[in-house]
Image (tube, rainbow, N blue to C red; front, top):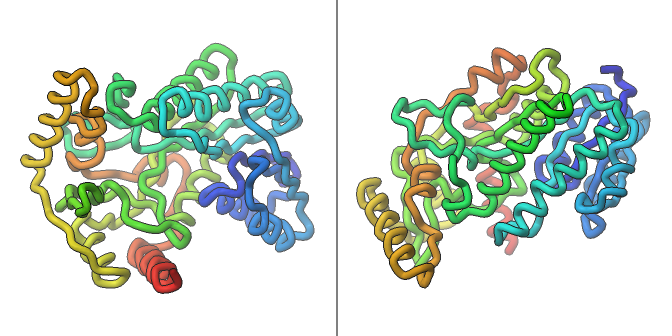
Length: 344
C-alpha cells in the first residue's frame, strides 16, 4: 500500500473504530474515509482529524443497510476495516440485518468498485463453541455449529457474518482477513465482562472462578486489527486477538471490588453452574419456551467452561507485539472506572 491509498473504516466513531483510525493516521496514512451512522456523535472523530492536518479524513454519514450508501462509501477504496456493529442485536432478525446484510452490502459495493486489496472483518470470540478438551482455544478451534440454538443473537450474527466473508472470498475472489478480539477493555468501557459473571436476580453470580479471561487492551487490539489490513500474504486467514499475562476471573473481580466499588457476589463452582444451566435449558424445552432459553449449555461452554488462550499466530504472522502491558492496561481501566463511578 501507498500512504495515500484510500482506506475505509466503518464504525469509526465507536470504541475500537476510533482507535483504528488513529492508529492508521499515526502510521502515516493520509487518506481515510470514516463511515458513521447519521446519529453518531462526531466530536472525538473531528478532534482526531484536526490533530492530523496533513491528512485527509473524510467523515461520511451513511446507513449500511442502504446499498447506495455502501456503494458510495466503498468507491475507490483499497482497504476496508469493517468495525460497524448494529444497534439492533436483541433479536435474531435485527442481528442478522445489522451484521450480515450490512456486510453483504459493503462487499457488493467493493466488488463493483474493483479496487479492493483487503477486507478486514472484525468478528468476536463469541463465535467459538469451546467444547473441545484440548485446553487451548486458538484459530483452529471449532466455531459454534448451531448458533441459532445458543440463545444469543450476537453470536448467531457473527458466525453468519464470517461465513459470508468466506463465501465471497471463494466465489468472488474478495481478499479478506477475519480478526476475532477477545474482551476489549480500557478507558471508556465500564463494568465487568460477562466472562467473570452475571448480575441477575439482584445478585452478582461469579461464574468464572479461576478461568483466564481473554482480555485485549484497546490499543493492543487496534494495533492487531490495523496490521491485519496491511500485512501481505495473509488473505483468507483468521486471527485471534488476546494479550499476554491474562488475569483470572477471580483476580478481575477482586480488583474491581477493591478499587472501583464494592458489591455482594456469590461464587458458583463450575459443576454447579453447569447443572443449573442444563436444568434451565431442559425446562425451557419442556415448557416450549415458557422460560426463555437464555441460559443453556452452549452459552456456559462459550463463556465459563474455561480455556487457555494463545496469541502466537498474530505475533508470528502479523508481527504484532503488545504495546500496553496487561498490568498497565488494567490500571488505566480501573482508574477510569473509578473516576466514572465517583463522577456519577
